[in-house]
Length: 190
Image (cartoon, rainbow, N blue to C red; front, side, top):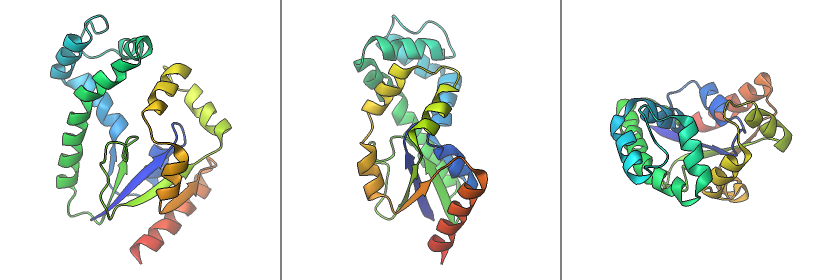
């Protein structure tokens, strides 16, 4: 199985590009959203760790945002509760798809949480700041400070790009993105 890790800035189009490969995708952001919606045990742990922020199950995104905004260290407390479950779900995903030729790993903290393996192929999604900002601002619960807090947990983009095997310049044009993915797949599979 070939593991392809997709890296890039918030709003760069990682999830969109990941889907274009046509192989199973592990999307960590979706996994986290499911955990907040479906795992009462996570709510109970969050309520215990941060009692002033979480009031009801499923975890309310507004309460989550308030916790992250109020204190920088809260993001670490939340991560310690949620990340082990994301790792477990990743492990299940890999076992389920072990016969697939390729799997795509769309995980924002892929390198930071040491989820990468030596032979993984890393693809960096690069896009212009104005495109990323437009995309981020269109999100339902956009908050500039939240974006900054999330980025503070991430490795610098320059470093991510430098260690990547391929760079896709995402201009948010479907045809260009498809061509870039096709070209990379041809190189990987030859």
